[in-house]
Image 1 (cartoon, rainbow, N blue to C red):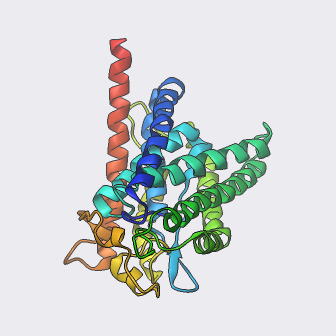
Image 2 (image 1 turned 90 degrees about the vertical axis):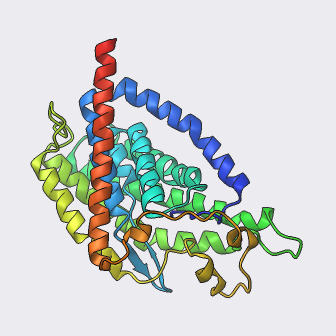
Length: 327
């Protein structure tokens, strides 16, 4: 679901980024106002869970892959506004360091995965929960919410892909950017997410939420020194160690092919916007490092991503504390 650069027109990317600006502004205001200071580092831990979930690629028939996201999970534990910011920073890290998702399309990816997914998933979760907090009911509500949330996000991405050939063509009538219309993008995107990837999102959400609730980590996610509890550290390390399993899924997710791959898909041409668009060289493209075995590169990427996300939110926690002291 990570839209690469040059699949969407610059105009589309601009509109999507502009749509996210007020969402980010409101989310920052809400988190500052409503989230206790000692929960800010928990946003980094939650973002790390999402980051790791997105490294576990799952194969689909036909050679494509997909993954869970975890946006509804974060929203259930910390609220949808915190989820929006946690997911946005995780997506930014993925784009800048690992080349997973585009730089120009960052706003679109955030709209789908940091806005639509957690807010839709959390909204349905609250409706189904109906103020009843029994463990089984909450897990079922969160599971259903996560399934609908990820499919809502996938549908938005499919529409963004599908309108490109309708709006942007060259003088020969060929698409300038994504060459697949809605008749292709919607069924292909939704097939995977209504089945395998949606199920993966449910399993990930319910499993992690059950672990969190069982260990009461939602109320002790950070101590006064912002330290991550030992059970959560162990859980994160196990996920990091297991990330190479994501390499077992051969193929590339639909809509994430590079120029060489899309030229082989049978459309007969490479869209000019893709051929001449932005080229960004990430530090560790595709969670790898030149000269290192793929599995080791994957684990190193997971360690770096997790550490950076936790550090970023711990710094924000300290800054918030300093601001409150000044007031």
